[in-house]
Length: 271
Image 1: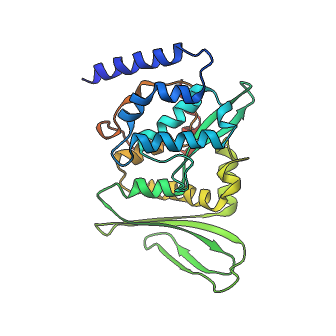
Image 2 (image 1 turned 180 degrees about the vertical axis):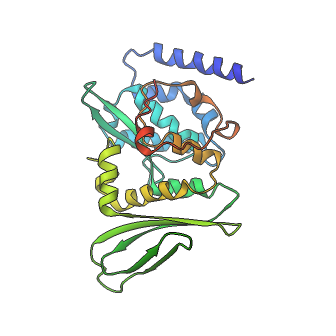
């Protein structure tokens, strides 16, 4: 059964890539309707996913300049996770950027803050998850060690500039964990690991992206569903080819929790 799936995916991949011609990205999407349907989990219908992705293409001219391989790879990453790309829900983003080494536009897949939360709640062990921004006039204290503590009282009125961001998760069995980062830490992290730091949501919605960054670090300590493990393994990658695993049904696949740091994940360019 698994071997047949791989053979079918390989055949579909060859057919799609062999018919380049003057096809637009919309044409490629139409060619892949069957594969999109097979990749999507039950939380999102193929019709809605296709409509949202086409809207993203029509509203962002730079996306239409991306290589078909990178765009389709980013699109299928969103499909496998059942996340809406570039919609008002803020679940995931398809980010165009210029690859100066190749002299072309490529598309990068990014999970949004709300996408991280959605994936966490798909776990049967999840109880609550939150991420908050701390401003300079807030009361904020935290301790690590054997008895970790975190206390945050938002200031009334003018809260000042954002200085920190933190995330906290709770499990149904009483377990919990939290992570705290300064805004300077978030910026250094983004500049080092995100190809799209100079544009896209890092510039238009920095606080949301800061929350996503600290959520990702925090959730490394939490039990993760298959979907979230896949999200971690594909975090902000650029696909330069249409790989066979894009055609597998997410809920039937097994993925281990990756222990690599963000930078290593960023560098896993899939051929």
